Image 1 (cartoon, rainbow over the protein chains, first blue to last red):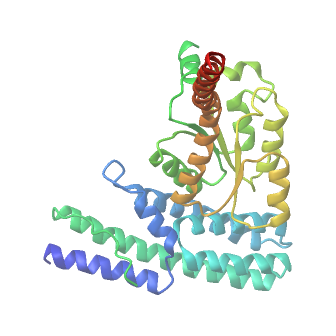
Image 2: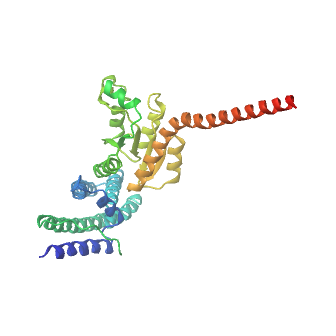
Image 3: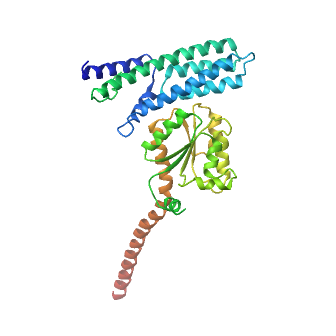
Length: 154
Length: 184
């Protein structure tokens, strides 16, 4: 595939993530913080997010599987995940966490289980999409090209 | 340490910021936001670690950890253990560090919380996720606060000098007038 074509594909793909609401403007903020001195900043932060989220989701699953659910333990985990997803612009994960927290407040175990599934679904979606995005970027860089700056024409 | 003295007494334009956040993702982001805004950054993951870094935890031996003077503390509000608010209180209670501006960050826009922090002496309250514009604005605020101290003395000099010059002319004019009256 030609370099120009690859760059166009990347732009279209990135744009689709914003249009689908998977990512929000905070992701653009992160991209603004990336430059020649820190060329891998975004992927570094996102990798940290993946590692942190895997841990949190695991803890949440364990907490909700207890005979008696301790919501004092569940809520801080959800709050953490809400915070980190918000910091990288993973909008749908963040929104799912907001709903999750309201069920925690109501101490609704059934509701919380459903929310956890929803959060996991959104998380794996954004993880998948971002991994694809980084692969596209790597292909461009490997072909000697530059990552095109995100145009905010939408 | 001599190096520490140099950096605290000189009017360098680089701020040293202590960033406190229990989230590893947020620490990475705030560190980059601050570095890109030409600040030196030290990040810690809890209020307790922040107090240790400042040497406020009662352990005399730990005060040697700090090699640079801290000009600004930015802390998350909701943290396990010591909250950002409690950290703010401890800093304002200490005679050594109460002058250091403290900024609170939170993902929740809770008015009573904001008021509580501002009343306790917080410099500002940032809503997460923190953006580059927030950090730039904050840096300007802090720098202006430091420069205002220097400006106070320099501003007194120029208008005073102008006033002195004016008085000089008035006196000359007065003397000439009196002289003319005497001659006439």
